[in-house]
Image 1 (cartoon, helix red, strand yellow):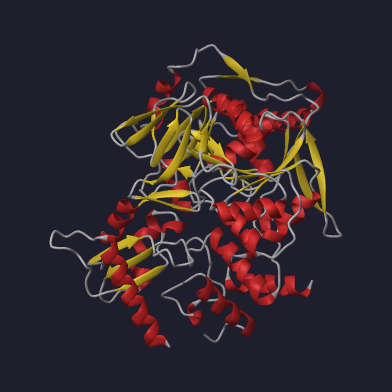
Image 2 (cartoon, rainbow over the protein chains, first blue to last red; image 1 turned 180 degrees about the vertical axis):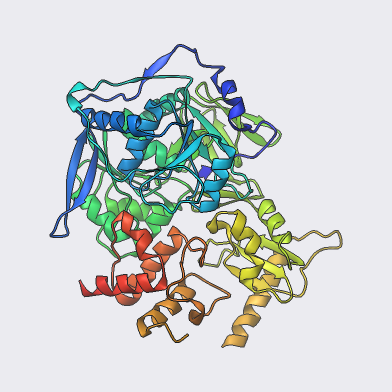
Length: 483
Length: 89
């Protein structure tokens, strides 16, 4: 699962402390931008032909570098580029061009206009680069619609200073301000190295890779953007959403084929009744898969399903194949330490120790069971939030007298949150106004039940069993009144 | 609501049922109101769930190039038109 770590006083305070991330890096050191040969294929971009079928245009590393050099020269001046490119190949070209130009990619958890404005305010001298997003007013914009080619015969692989801040990944968060995770080239470069080993077992044969996750999410960034920069992987330049499109694209790709996806997409693929193509590797992250579901997917795709556990702060941390072994195998670069009922994670390529928000039980130094999340934390579609923060927002909504947001009972199909609300005269929509303005849409409760009062104990506490009883009673009487 | 076409009415009902839009009735969804972002606040998980419900109900597999998905799910009207096109082809 793509975990979120808790906020504590060690949280990075914006860019002012970027210099602290360099303490483990020799100032003068550099590493190459790509660990690929110039005539390797790095990407394959689908072009729709008149007949409706996709025609793929493969891009060699030398051509890719020429395009990124051209774009790097065209980019506006500035320190930060909010990279909202949706097309995966354009994101890759933009991501690298921004690094070559010496600027820093800002990778938000969503593309909402409020998020854009917030970032532009937090980071002076920033601009937005996009290929068709809706843009908040008042922010400098660079529209990246057309990729300009350069002279591919004269390209070399640039060296990037290890202490250069290349990206800031933002945890979605249910707080007003999302948390900034700084990624120097040192962090990214060594992350790529370890991921190539554990994602792909260091396979050196050429493989094609399709990802259904956004490039801006840390899992999407590592698997579909950084991996092709380091391993012999040709990434498909699109991001299909619907099962039919995923199947069609996989069928069109040359073997061996990898699909990078999530439990949400896998469920949709499984329920679609489509004939799924035989591929070579399934990678899944954001939430642990149920072993039965994993078994079904391995049977349908006729390949192993490898799950990745990670968080935005550290990137990928561990892997497992749950049909073989429910334990997670941590990547060998990480060190774990127990502290006050929390697990602290460390590695030479990380700027500092990271407190994990999950409960881990170790059977040896690098093998563990994931026992669950700390009580307050929720995870919806790979986005992590704090119930306490959501409840704070609910209770500060005009017209809401009392209320509680919680995870629904296990028998509900939807993983969306539910809410019990005391708010005479408000509609469900009005009761969610404050949340809607401040948090990602996935955290907005879907089933909102109005009650006269909450089942608080004498000390004001709300035990989960009391919440569920109240919720089920209200739900049943609601059903009875409508049938 | 008078301006929903019969196909849009049917789709609006499916939307409310599938996505558990508690406090909305199908009639409340204005055909040209944005479904995502500031409108109904739907997201890509909803798009997937809806696609699944549509394939189960109508036997139509939705397909879209990635740039197109946002336009397709813009409003009840654009989504309804898109399903009709998929059904026809």
